[in-house]
Image (cartoon, rainbow, N blue to C red; front, side, top):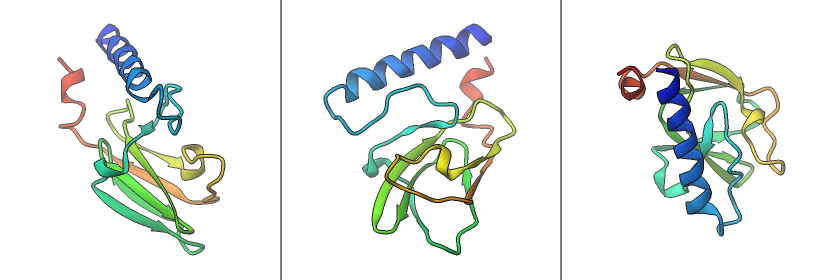
Length: 117
């Protein structure tokens, strides 16, 4: 099972590198919480403002964050089956800021089913 996860992570990283090598907009460093995604893949847009403290997402969901008119899209991909909580600032590009905003990633049993076999 651990070998399958490692192999899947390597394949994903290689595919991301090949597909985005010339794009220049994605950091293809392997991520603990998922990876940047194309805006067209987003399932919804979440506006972040000075009053935002929490955002709820589901593992496997692709979200576009709108912060002060700038947008950033992320596909959440946590390897923990129970989901988790992270600071939004951990995944944002350096030019975007959302200090103090927590992202609550809910469990999605269907999303991780492929890793259980």
